[in-house]
Image (cartoon, one colour):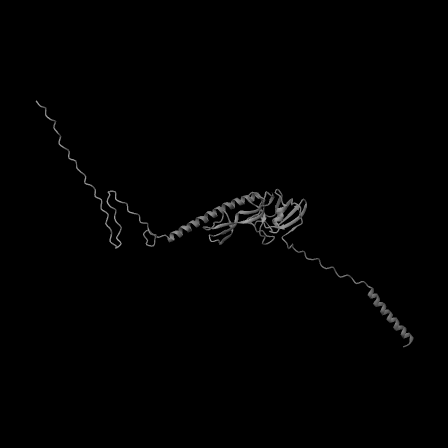
Length: 301
């Protein structure tokens, strides 16, 4: 190969090397940022950041089924709740904690059992439902009860089967693992605001009075039906007088005669009747004959 050709090949190799070097020096663009994570709903029933702090106000939203807890202006926690269903709504408005009872039980709602102990009504209400004869009533537990109204609406432990949905008879149910904390940090007099779709307290009381009358009528009808059923059952097994299948009548002892005659003897064991009782004879009346008048003695002349 001639010198000119060598120089040409070297020049070409140099250019190729320079091209690769320049390509390697270029900065690689950064990869695109990952997409932001999809927001998830809270997996727990409550959140608490107020240990050692008093709860000074509570706000309950029945549409969200949540209660927000405040210490002053700062939110220190929240919790899911279960308020009253549409037919048993929780009243809305401004309230306050009137009293606290740790081990309260309901005097209205619970379970009804028959005389054998079998559950016959899991949603028994006093004044509305009738227990079977010999049945018993087991009141529902309302542990960590904090009263909000005079007629019994309050906050307490209770099942929250579907967080975000109403489930109670008017009270505000709290998660069992958080109710004690809320009870501990809330004092009597703490203001409670209830907002959302529901009747105000005045309307709530009117509806409750109307419902109480309907329940009383329902209970009276149930009692009447039970009495009629009991009477019909008694008539079905009753036997007419003289029926040989009826109960044996008690034999009363004979009354002794008043004229001193001996009482009739018992029947003979051989089937021969004993001496019959004498027939009383009326005494014959004695007729009185008037005596002749006695003449006075004549005087002696």
